[in-house]
Length: 494
Image (cartoon, rainbow, N blue to C red; front, side, top):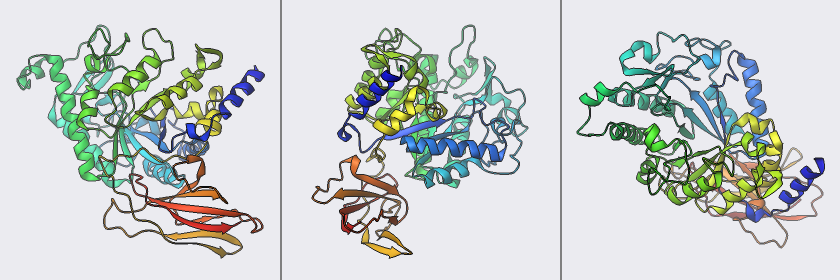
């Protein structure tokens, strides 16, 4: 068994740097709804998150998607919704010693060069395990705005006030916190359960807007919300990315000619989520379908689905939601001596519209099940990566850095530069890419293996040895959307 592992690792390490992408979202979901942080207390939760972030940073992760609103509650200080029981064990109870997990995570992620995307569950107002709601909770304050379904409470998407409220929550987060993105997963109308019926017949009669089919009306309600949500976020801060992670099947071929050759639950028909409309209308900035199945799954084959999404959802950056545990649980049908991570990553590279991966879930990668994390840090995500470009938000690069020069300071050789001038948020440099090239090597900033560091500082300590080795350092500036400036070079001896 050990021999097989070493053979696999050797095979992976034989991949060249050219197989890696310079721009790639490398995300990980950190969820709270599984109870991993509940009652940990401030110090222990911070310790746990610090360890996870450190390991994920080593793995090459550059985006953390952190769950902050699982059931119309908050893992941050909010005047609109109560503190989450998934933090303190009791909804409405503030953490003691007091802290703000969202603000803490923003600080810690930015310190590590990662983006932080705040993850909210829009319409779910109560999970199955919640037995007591805070008096401040919307289901207590406005019970008629919710409906019960399979022990859940759902904010009814057909009520405009509910859509307005969720947008108000998003605006509150975006306006008060320096988040890089705001993210929703697949909970719109509830997942269907045998014997359960969505109790919205009366509302449909009252608010049909001339739509005859109740299912079309439900999709219409969600469409209205998605458009409103997107415009609300970008009106508040234009650079904050809106991401949505739908269930992995849009429609089956038996339901639609453009459907995938699959046989499972469907976004469009069962969750009333017309994700392709949102992608094609530009109502989101990146799409992360949850392709959690294995290659060869009879109902929902992974390869079939990644090819389908690549073909149909290319109008916005397409990021693949990847199940870590299932990827290492199943063997590759074409190579039974290995699990499926190599084959899945090869498919990612093959698809021209796929621009990244989000790991479900972060702890599985941190725990390095099946050497998944080791393979990320040593092979697939060995070199740093910039975020996918989003020219539909901003495509103008900042100016070049100025006054690039190495300086001796207290026995350290430090490369300094000055930020370019900026007139507005789109011109402002917020990070810098430092490339390193050996003597005689062509300065090629398209090669990710030459990225020495990505930093938010305007200096970098150089690895000085004896002053005999010549290098060329090249520095570019990045704005909030990671548009990259022209390069400035400096020769140094280390």
